[in-house]
Image 1 (tube, helix red, strand yellow):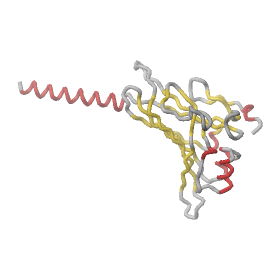
Image 2 (image 1 turned 30 degrees about the vertical axis):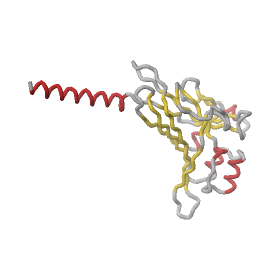
Image 3 (image 1 turned 45 degrees about the horizontal axis):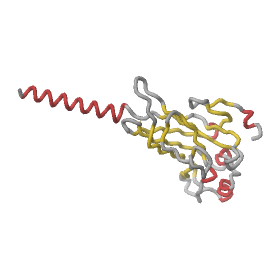
Image 4 (image 1 turned 45 degrees about the vertical axis):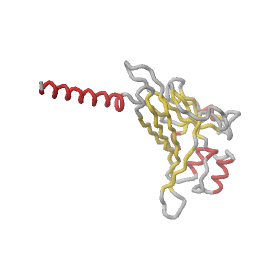
Length: 204
């Protein structure tokens, strides 16, 4: 009888650990990020001449119900060599959103399938950047390429944290972009690949 109890406890522990691993480690949100930044002419409702976007994809798992990724936390940080004498690294946050500022659909809290987010560089505020760049960003006259050109060793780091819609297990997606990753064109409708079209930026 004692052996049966021990076996039962062991089976229960193993089952519990397996259940915990499946719900907290195996069934998590799977977010993929585009490897390019899309550059297109700005919409009438958007400031500046160009709109710059990256795209997220909620990757589906085979044999599991389709669930949206929830509790999204998306951050974009511009990293560059400091203008101070110590040559340290500075970081400035770039606000992101689905559309232009002051729109009701600005915040993104869940991801059903895929979505492109705009880099709102005109809302960057930091004394770490030269005054002329700060003013140019606020006036939406400095492009994203211009921001890269104004610094040394510049890169854009995007981090997305999300929960699975059923298990609520958290996962993280990360992407790094450089100036060379900015390309003219639209993202394909159902994915994160960029369809290059230089003619869309023929005025740039």
